[in-house]
Image (cartoon, rainbow, N blue to C red):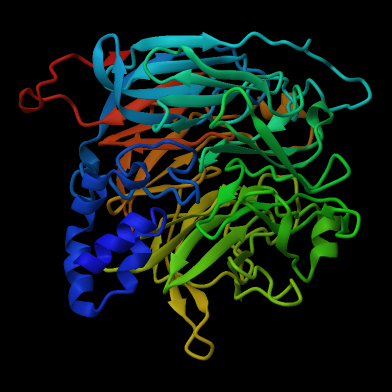
Length: 554
């Protein structure tokens, strides 16, 4: 076991991949002990949810979860529902939750859930009851603007509020948020006391996406030209509060080509940060990287690599750019991979160290079209949000794809189907080796039905959780039209190997979700909706667990 433990200490983000390097006998032993090792070492926040998508790679894999399983998922209930004092603004409301364990508060050590609201507040709630522990409301240092020169400012694309999911740094006991005016704040996890900043990080009233944190630096992405912020990847070194160092990795000279997948920057353990860029001009000499999966160096944010699909001109013309979702970084057979799919409904599997090969246009694998046969952009169909990945107890790597709208007639046939998928589905693939080349390929495993616009799924101990978010994603007619014909979101739990439904929240969630996300920690699943409600699903209290406090539902 010594060789595995050495790998465990040295490579925090490739725990499961280290198993593949072991002889078969040791591999079987480690697979049996891996859950205990993850929980006892505390590596990577295994039993917490510190950032969007659980980890810097945005895998969505809560690999430390042990309470929820295919055998127990049906017993989940709504434990509490808390409404935040945070009015929605057009499509924007509350961010995805993040969760920290063993936080020192005035009431003792607690698990705490953090959600930011578009109006400028960060809310901290007790994970077991939903009680608000503290709230911090930022003071904008720049006057809000409705820039007539830029039609989107002050609208649904540029809401002049908090848009980035916070990130937690347990090493400094801090949670970081970006205020509407672009200031970065670091707040004490237990009290909300200001520990860091405010420091001007990005352009005031820019559109920034889920924060990430690696090596003492906070990362985000900017898109769509909001606040006249230039599209790109941004970082700030927060290790010295008196001397912040801000780095910009610009991807465009215009208001387009931003990385606007809700996962923000995806950070691999190979010293690179990744993102999928939106439509616009592609001209590397001018510094414009539209319609690409781009990689920047983690330290200086210089572009070091990119993948440009061979049909990029068609994608640009049809508005099928790669910005509608976030890539995912993962390991497979001692290789580092990036998978990405967007509005065109095609999934690319790329070498994380050489995204498109020597010509920047050769992926390791490209799927057939999975959906969007109508080949239209703005009716809310295709792949939105981001892909997710996990490895099961047998060492098999899985990739999960949320697809809005019906599957393509040319999509692969799935051995297992689970209902009518005409409105949307989760598609599950196993990552296999091409017998001819040895490169990764996707093998269809199962497909669900019944998802009205699915959000990115998360994976926990053999169970997939995903939202049928109920939003009206048709962009024609403007933002106000999108507030019509919505329906309540539904949280569903699925068997990760078959897609069989194990849990359904029914009518527990009362509003729809736009650009949300799910968090999971220690047997509880957290969701936010457009009415700024926060929901907690978990196992009802029993005398054996010492918690007899009744659920709170407002």
